[in-house]
Image 1 (cartoon, one colour):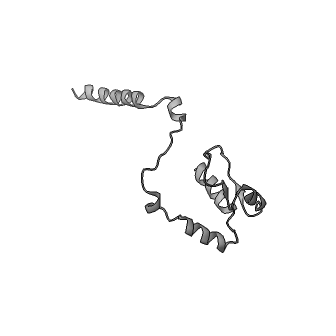
Image 2 (tube, rainbow, N blue to C red):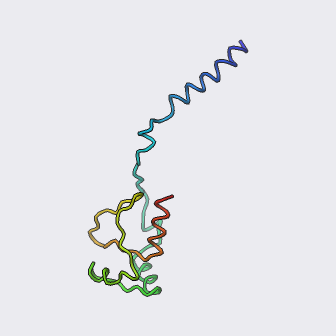
Length: 110
C-alpha cells in the first residue's frame, strides 16, 4: 500500500499539472483590465489639481489641438504603443508632459 502511494501521488501530481496548464495561445492573450471603482473617490487627479500642477511647472491650459501642437517643447503627444492603446478621445487631446510620458511607458512595459 505504501509503495502504491509513493508511485501514485507523483503520477497524479504530474497529471494535474499537465491538465491545468494553459495553452500557449492563452498565455499570449492580453486580457483587458477594467476598473470597477469610483475614479473621483479613489484618485486625486481632479481637473483643478491638474491645472494647479500644470501652472506650477509652466504649462498653460490649451483650448484645442493647434495650441497643444505649438507647445511641443513642453508636451508630448501620446499615441498607442506596443503595451497600451489610446482610445479616441472626445473631450480632451492626448498630450502629456515628458515626465508623465516616460512614466506611462514604464508602467505599460512593466
